Length: 194
Image 1 (cartoon, rainbow, N blue to C red):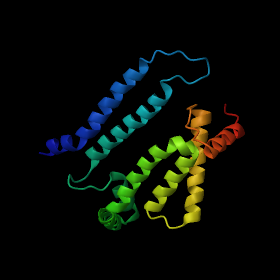
Image 2: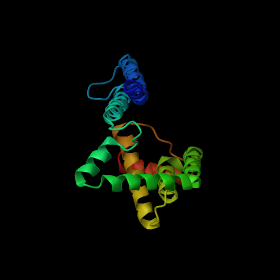
Image 3: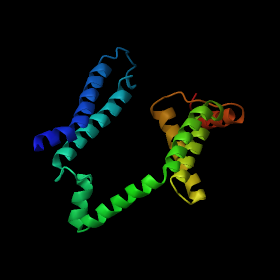
Image 4: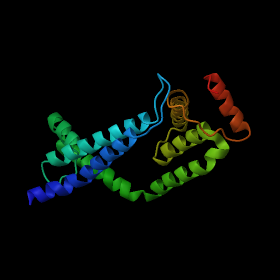
Protein backbone atom coordinates (compact mmCIF):
# COMPACT_ATOMS: atom_id res chain seq x y z
CA UNK A 1 0.00 0.00 0.00
CA UNK A 2 2.89 2.38 0.76
CA UNK A 3 4.40 1.79 -2.70
CA UNK A 4 1.04 2.49 -4.37
CA UNK A 5 0.70 5.72 -2.39
CA UNK A 6 4.25 6.74 -3.37
CA UNK A 7 3.47 6.11 -7.04
CA UNK A 8 0.25 8.12 -6.74
CA UNK A 9 2.08 11.09 -5.22
CA UNK A 10 5.05 11.07 -7.61
CA UNK A 11 3.27 10.14 -10.87
CA UNK A 12 2.24 13.70 -11.89
CA UNK A 13 5.80 14.94 -11.38
CA UNK A 14 7.19 11.97 -13.29
CA UNK A 15 4.88 12.74 -16.23
CA UNK A 16 5.95 16.41 -16.26
CA UNK A 17 9.59 15.30 -16.09
CA UNK A 18 9.15 12.93 -19.05
CA UNK A 19 7.34 15.57 -21.08
CA UNK A 20 10.07 18.11 -20.29
CA UNK A 21 12.82 15.71 -21.39
CA UNK A 22 10.92 14.98 -24.63
CA UNK A 23 10.53 18.71 -25.32
CA UNK A 24 14.27 19.15 -24.67
CA UNK A 25 15.01 16.67 -27.47
CA UNK A 26 12.65 18.61 -29.73
CA UNK A 27 14.50 21.86 -28.90
CA UNK A 28 17.79 20.16 -29.80
CA UNK A 29 16.44 19.63 -33.32
CA UNK A 30 15.92 23.35 -34.01
CA UNK A 31 17.94 23.76 -37.19
CA UNK A 32 18.35 27.52 -37.40
CA UNK A 33 21.89 28.85 -37.37
CA UNK A 34 22.77 32.04 -35.55
CA UNK A 35 25.63 34.47 -35.72
CA UNK A 36 28.51 33.93 -33.36
CA UNK A 37 27.85 35.36 -29.93
CA UNK A 38 24.05 35.45 -30.31
CA UNK A 39 21.63 33.15 -28.59
CA UNK A 40 19.98 30.60 -30.83
CA UNK A 41 16.26 29.87 -30.98
CA UNK A 42 16.76 26.90 -28.67
CA UNK A 43 18.20 28.89 -25.74
CA UNK A 44 15.03 30.26 -24.10
CA UNK A 45 12.96 27.10 -24.49
CA UNK A 46 15.84 25.15 -22.94
CA UNK A 47 16.05 27.57 -20.00
CA UNK A 48 12.32 27.17 -19.37
CA UNK A 49 12.58 23.39 -19.81
CA UNK A 50 15.50 23.21 -17.37
CA UNK A 51 13.35 24.99 -14.79
CA UNK A 52 10.41 22.68 -15.57
CA UNK A 53 12.55 19.55 -15.26
CA UNK A 54 14.12 20.85 -12.06
CA UNK A 55 10.70 21.60 -10.57
CA UNK A 56 9.49 18.11 -11.52
CA UNK A 57 12.53 16.52 -9.87
CA UNK A 58 11.98 18.67 -6.79
CA UNK A 59 8.31 17.67 -6.67
CA UNK A 60 9.18 13.96 -6.97
CA UNK A 61 11.74 14.24 -4.18
CA UNK A 62 9.36 16.19 -1.97
CA UNK A 63 6.52 13.72 -2.58
CA UNK A 64 8.82 10.80 -1.82
CA UNK A 65 10.16 12.37 1.38
CA UNK A 66 6.85 13.30 3.00
CA UNK A 67 6.60 11.73 6.40
CA UNK A 68 2.90 10.92 6.15
CA UNK A 69 0.85 10.35 3.01
CA UNK A 70 -1.98 12.58 4.28
CA UNK A 71 0.38 15.47 5.07
CA UNK A 72 -0.03 18.34 2.59
CA UNK A 73 2.65 20.52 4.17
CA UNK A 74 5.74 21.06 2.04
CA UNK A 75 8.78 19.14 3.25
CA UNK A 76 10.76 22.41 3.25
CA UNK A 77 8.22 24.22 5.41
CA UNK A 78 7.91 21.25 7.74
CA UNK A 79 11.69 20.89 8.20
CA UNK A 80 12.32 24.62 8.61
CA UNK A 81 9.49 25.07 11.10
CA UNK A 82 10.50 21.89 12.95
CA UNK A 83 14.07 23.13 13.31
CA UNK A 84 12.80 26.48 14.60
CA UNK A 85 10.41 24.75 16.98
CA UNK A 86 7.28 26.14 15.30
CA UNK A 87 5.96 23.21 13.27
CA UNK A 88 2.44 23.36 14.67
CA UNK A 89 2.28 27.15 14.15
CA UNK A 90 3.23 26.68 10.49
CA UNK A 91 0.50 24.07 10.02
CA UNK A 92 -2.11 26.37 11.57
CA UNK A 93 -0.98 29.28 9.38
CA UNK A 94 -1.22 27.16 6.24
CA UNK A 95 -4.66 25.90 7.26
CA UNK A 96 -5.78 29.49 7.90
CA UNK A 97 -4.45 30.65 4.53
CA UNK A 98 -6.31 27.84 2.77
CA UNK A 99 -9.55 28.75 4.57
CA UNK A 100 -9.13 32.43 3.62
CA UNK A 101 -8.55 31.51 -0.03
CA UNK A 102 -11.80 29.54 -0.09
CA UNK A 103 -13.71 32.57 1.19
CA UNK A 104 -12.57 34.93 -1.60
CA UNK A 105 -13.39 33.46 -5.02
CA UNK A 106 -14.27 36.97 -6.23
CA UNK A 107 -10.58 37.92 -6.07
CA UNK A 108 -9.67 34.92 -8.21
CA UNK A 109 -12.33 35.89 -10.76
CA UNK A 110 -11.03 39.48 -10.78
CA UNK A 111 -7.48 38.19 -11.36
CA UNK A 112 -8.63 36.13 -14.33
CA UNK A 113 -10.58 39.13 -15.66
CA UNK A 114 -7.41 41.22 -15.33
CA UNK A 115 -5.50 38.72 -17.48
CA UNK A 116 -8.23 38.78 -20.12
CA UNK A 117 -8.26 42.57 -20.02
CA UNK A 118 -4.49 42.54 -20.47
CA UNK A 119 -4.80 40.45 -23.62
CA UNK A 120 -7.48 42.79 -25.00
CA UNK A 121 -5.69 46.04 -24.02
CA UNK A 122 -2.12 45.25 -25.06
CA UNK A 123 -2.54 46.10 -28.79
CA UNK A 124 -3.95 49.52 -27.86
CA UNK A 125 -1.98 50.45 -24.72
CA UNK A 126 1.28 48.75 -25.64
CA UNK A 127 3.28 46.27 -23.60
CA UNK A 128 4.65 48.58 -20.92
CA UNK A 129 1.43 50.37 -19.95
CA UNK A 130 -0.64 47.15 -20.13
CA UNK A 131 1.88 45.27 -17.99
CA UNK A 132 1.91 48.09 -15.44
CA UNK A 133 -1.90 47.98 -15.20
CA UNK A 134 -1.94 44.18 -14.95
CA UNK A 135 0.64 44.10 -12.15
CA UNK A 136 -1.18 46.87 -10.30
CA UNK A 137 -4.56 45.12 -10.65
CA UNK A 138 -3.19 41.80 -9.43
CA UNK A 139 -1.65 43.42 -6.34
CA UNK A 140 -4.80 45.38 -5.52
CA UNK A 141 -7.11 42.39 -6.06
CA UNK A 142 -4.81 40.28 -3.86
CA UNK A 143 -5.48 42.70 -1.02
CA UNK A 144 -2.41 44.97 -1.10
CA UNK A 145 -3.78 48.16 0.46
CA UNK A 146 -1.04 50.74 -0.22
CA UNK A 147 -1.87 52.21 -3.64
CA UNK A 148 1.25 54.37 -4.00
CA UNK A 149 3.62 51.54 -3.10
CA UNK A 150 1.71 49.11 -5.33
CA UNK A 151 1.95 51.59 -8.22
CA UNK A 152 5.69 51.94 -7.71
CA UNK A 153 6.17 48.16 -7.60
CA UNK A 154 4.05 47.74 -10.74
CA UNK A 155 6.03 50.45 -12.55
CA UNK A 156 9.36 48.85 -11.63
CA UNK A 157 8.04 45.42 -12.63
CA UNK A 158 6.78 46.65 -16.01
CA UNK A 159 10.08 48.43 -16.62
CA UNK A 160 12.11 45.32 -15.73
CA UNK A 161 9.99 43.16 -18.04
CA UNK A 162 10.44 45.73 -20.81
CA UNK A 163 14.23 45.76 -20.40
CA UNK A 164 14.46 41.96 -20.26
CA UNK A 165 12.36 41.47 -23.38
CA UNK A 166 13.96 44.30 -25.37
CA UNK A 167 17.62 44.08 -24.36
CA UNK A 168 18.18 40.46 -23.31
CA UNK A 169 15.63 38.28 -25.09
CA UNK A 170 15.21 40.51 -28.18
CA UNK A 171 11.45 40.07 -28.41
CA UNK A 172 9.38 42.51 -30.40
CA UNK A 173 6.73 43.93 -28.07
CA UNK A 174 3.40 45.56 -28.98
CA UNK A 175 3.88 49.31 -29.27
CA UNK A 176 0.30 50.38 -28.71
CA UNK A 177 -1.61 53.12 -30.51
CA UNK A 178 -1.63 56.92 -30.34
CA UNK A 179 0.11 58.41 -27.31
CA UNK A 180 0.88 54.94 -25.95
CA UNK A 181 2.87 54.19 -29.10
CA UNK A 182 4.77 57.45 -28.66
CA UNK A 183 5.53 56.53 -25.04
CA UNK A 184 6.80 53.07 -26.04
CA UNK A 185 8.94 54.52 -28.85
CA UNK A 186 10.44 57.07 -26.44
CA UNK A 187 11.23 54.28 -23.97
CA UNK A 188 12.84 52.23 -26.74
CA UNK A 189 14.90 55.22 -27.88
CA UNK A 190 16.07 55.72 -24.31
CA UNK A 191 17.56 52.21 -24.38
CA UNK A 192 18.79 52.32 -27.95
CA UNK A 193 16.30 49.74 -29.21
CA UNK A 194 15.23 50.01 -32.84
